[in-house]
Length: 285
Image (cartoon, rainbow, N blue to C red; front, side):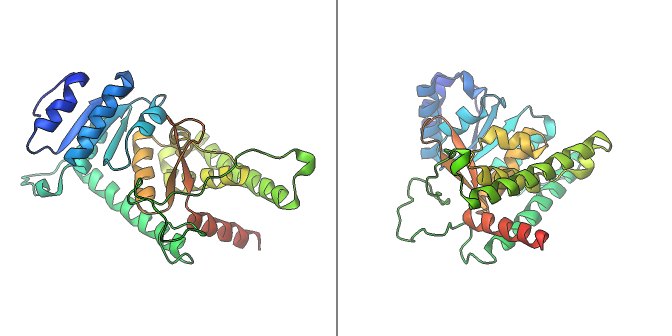
């Protein structure tokens, strides 16, 4: 730990540091938005990682304020293991060589969890790319388009989430609503199991988030980061790590709220949506 500073002095200190691995921000929701923007810019210029410890209620606003160019590790109601995982993930690669005499059970659990996340991410990526050719690339996008504002991600075209009057909804929308009801019913059934068995016995946040985003897409409803964390049925810090993994793998995309720049939405990449469509069509056969 190099220094513990008030937010108003942090940006200048980050710029003055010759080498800096990471910046840990506690309660960013309590920091003035202008000061927090300056700190984020300093972190982005330095190229270091950011560990952001916030509350679930403030998550959407804080997430929208952090540029996509910053590597962020999120902590929400975190315990000691979550903090150790965030430190390990945020650490610069040049410092990854560590001499250890022994490993405690917590570190072994962290290694197994990271391996499982990587395995499932690769599996989901293979499914989503089966017909797309390019990971996470929505159909209808041209390679010549400018996405410099959002490196390493692909932005989805803006979608109109306004619903049509029920009496004028075409047959296709009726089918979409029926499919969405089926998916919501499946999610409720998954939650019902937790009343009879331990919740962690069936923990599958990737699939729960995929189903929630799929149903929301059919309902033409946007999904905030905090809402998706709740839908995952795991602790928010774990859910945020999954969201990051799925976004980096091209399965999820980030969308700005066209009506409120302080919020972002999470949506399915077109290839992921297409894979889910084919999956549920196969179930109905």
